[in-house]
Length: 304
Ligand code: SF4
Image (cartoon, rainbow, N blue to C red; front, side, top):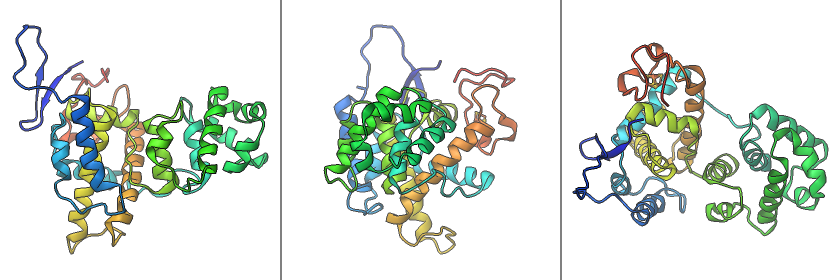
């Protein structure tokens, strides 16, 4: 597994050695990364003004990422050209069922979530009020098909209480403060439940980023910030162009839709072509831009 430090300016990977010499360049600390992230976030998700500040990408340049914002838009365009537009991908989008689904889908296939959701619907337990008041043991039984039902029942109770506390649209921090709710779950809730522009980074996204760029040790926050900036910049350019074919007139509306669409495209791509084992690189729409990191010459086995 190629691990190392990416030079964002040159796009090259330096392998970490064991020479004992001091590194010339200090790696960004956790505090630096958080500062960068806040710089990006402050121009992307607050107040609905998604595309106002060109300098947002400067925050991203601090990360070890070898691609430009144009590359991200190109990946989105190539995948969309190949698989076609993806709409209404998450069942029940925009309802509280998305919140429930995002919790239930942790570590299980959607088919199991579907069974649990059917049970909850039958029991009229798909609102925050109903979930908060239902007996926890009953709830565990209803969601048993989704696995880890004890932990998930307690998470659902906690999330429901958050909504009952007056949060019509919860903050990311409040969601992350709930035990068992990680970044992927919180961002799925915000994006699919509330149309908030938070790009969801799942295992498929990490795998694709690693293979395409060779940057295999990026964190959730780093990948998310780069995708959000790339899509924001690309959307802005496209909306300014007279030949834009995007179905949005406003970037603050379109950004969340683009985040959802690219996430759906990545999942589709990971299942159809960029498979975990033996990816079908020859028929891949991204083959011209992909480093194929971790994939051997015959593509028969892969590291990532
Ligand atoms: S070229 Fe191969 S490794 Fe790269 S994205 Fe396509 S299928 Fe995946």
